[in-house]
Image (tube, rainbow, N blue to C red; front, side, top):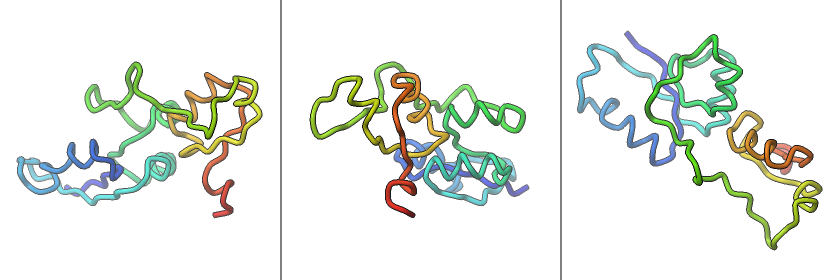
Length: 132
């Protein structure tokens, strides 16, 4: 059986799937068509039902509870481990709420956490910032 598998090119993901994709472990007859893309692209592909197995942001997963099952291993979310809000200079909370903030994607966990910390901020994805 051939399954579509989406993950990002980040080191954690490539390490996790290396042995499986390079036949260093027995996948019991399973084959994989790999889609290596940024996490927001994977989130959106999952929402369209295009991937059998995929990395998802926790934020995107909240919209996909009926389509995907969350595994109890492999998570990259934890206490005191990002995301980071980076600026040229220190900013007050009021300045952050008025600033234009670049985010990795609408359905990313980073954007979700930003909205919790600064509910009145103005996040923008790269396509909105650069006209892509």
